[in-house]
Length: 428
Image (cartoon, rainbow, N blue to C red; front, side):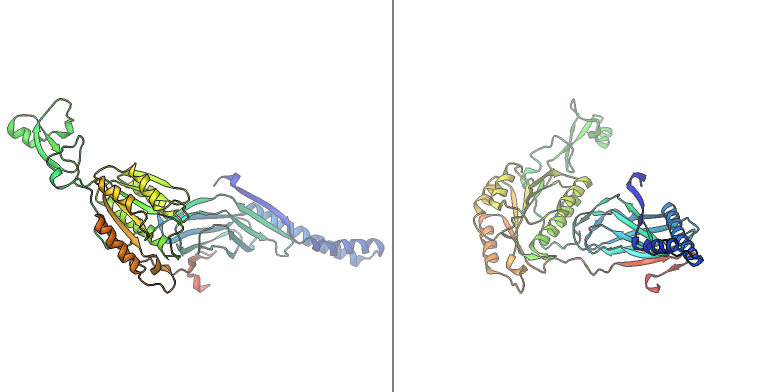
């Protein structure tokens, strides 16, 4: 940690404590007596000792915190290792740590005693309750002299960004849609680049990459032969998330918003695991488009976007479907996740089908997410209507996705005493 990110100050905390000394000094002037002199020396000595004690702590008291792990999801444990070190010969009779992190359910603020020339270590942990972008820090240490006259304040201004991702353990209840690049297309169309599907071997032609050479055939025939690739059996997949604030229901984890994120997270993981490219289109307060790509980096980008989503958009699904038509390619797959069970956006959906885009709609049954809510017949009717138009349609209701365990209590998993002993937090 940079020195510029640490600020140490000594604060005159109890200013009224100077009053007795002033009164005694006045009395010593007006009514000369050895008693007043003794009191002046005593009170002055207390002030001097207090200041020197605080100055020692100011110079020699330090704190440190280290975050454990990196990738954090809802339901995971967030853990940090803390250390207070006092290199002075004087003890810090009390040290208060105040944390200003904004992670829900995580409160590592504590108070301990640290003897002279010793250190105190402990681990603080809590279950991550909410996805989103948060910060760890800043934080502050407070200590002082035994008489409470001066206070030492150590401000650590360093902050660390923490992204809590949506959980990845949601169960999928329907088959992942494929694109239209399959069936009779395979074997007729040939790819101009490497894919996972090798269809045949042909004679080498100028400008063919050397990595395409099929050595067993070359050795058997004596002619330089190369592999020929088919277009991939499944096209790119896109996920469109409807975040129109006017159609979402429920609160907390039991809401259409959270179910939308959980489903999108699970779908992204499953699609990328099959080595398919996936793109994401979200229409919240700030619409976001992530073009379709493969690989781990794309997974991180999508999960980071999902972590910060909120159902606060003003763009309706009609507009979203129109926008994505300009992005998605023929032969791709589109998964639409929406709690909108009105039929006004169905004509826009039909345009995608006519464009030979394999479309699946996941309908979130909003009424089932309300308090004492139950399944609605409107969602069932909407599902049948969509299926009659051609696209596939599924209904997702409250309770259809397994939610992560969020039982959370912030605990000290262990402490290391100044003498080097290891004790449980509950042992005191």
